[in-house]
Image (cartoon, rainbow, N blue to C red; front, side, top):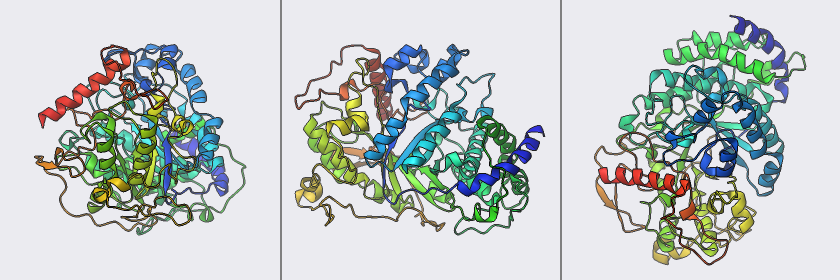
Length: 588
């Protein structure tokens, strides 16, 4: 009750600042990057800094201090100060300025559930505190630069994927898929939604993503379809509680704009029969959590009374972001069924993990230039689609000349619908990193000329012409820029609540061999060969490497073969991940 009383008195003043909170929106075409390893560290991306901090490297990331969970457990007294230093130096105003100058209009920020600190069970979970303060700092800088933001729930309560640094904890047990942890994730969603609409620092936030890379085998993710639906319902319930209208939706809730009491609004919504019991319980449970977060970040107020009807009611709803249906196999739930209001879908594609195309330049370019993922997803209602993670990494030593083509070709295909976001904005440049930045850092690629300063343009506008329709195709060009203008095969970014009809049926339980027309190689349905295979013990194969020495080459057109026999910690981890994926592929 104390927290509720605090929230009542606090928000009575805080809501006066809402006149300055303007709802963000996603650009009609996304040219973006991920801010990976900022507020959620993946040690493979900064190996020397990780060791200097006191972390470790090992073959299996669960066996040593190779995740944020293990780091906080090993250094409970110093972890907050250590990570604060990292947060303040990994992503800075200089990075924001560089991204703005490079034409980047959107960033995706990977976050762990522990950034909302009251959700952490400190008896059995170890994570640093204070990340929410640095998130607000970064959001303010991005807002000033005019860059839109997607808040990506990258590491979920209980862990959504086994033995992955991106999950925050390396473990062989993925316990996210339980009612308890689904509930915690929904509280996280509710709090982030409230902050997005109530905290001026969150002004650039346009979207919130439900889950990053769940286990690919849907048989191992019980309840995930219901979670997808409740994720959207929670966001819309919080918005409707605040009087924010969702296109295509009518609500019996009437926010009393004269009370300035958001606590009452959430309580009223939790008692409404327009939501299911899980959503109502989330609204009840998020109130004390939100109160603690509000106190922690010390939200400012000018103390003036405000006509809330002109500030909240006219705000745009948040865009919900879902991993697309084809990420999973074995008759997965369709996230299109969860759509209420604006929703967009996220696809990830890395060629360097194999089983996408043969490991040579010709096969890579032929495959990506004829990529049909956007059309396949649209046929199942997963549109608009953006490619939220990709890199110019390869399975073979790549020349500078090829990497320019490889960047252009991927930009061409991924830009046909909503756009793309490169993984990652930066990678540590050090001897220990062994050249990883060359193919995984957007800013490094920009320096080397792989990427054009204007992300909408290309080094070679005709890069895909030799590979489309057997070399007889043409790439449409923009008459003013002379660069490829991919045809929009789906719908524009969501602006209303009209759902896209989804055909019945998804993937089959038993994959059947087919032939990939782009590569001529045998593939299977039910498990997209455009992404890594899934471990049969649960958890997705890591789509980002723990090392990329085999993907690296000197910054010249001369290539060198990586020394696969050298058992550096990074190569051992990478080999382990490939072995897991290969084991999974054989099980098909």
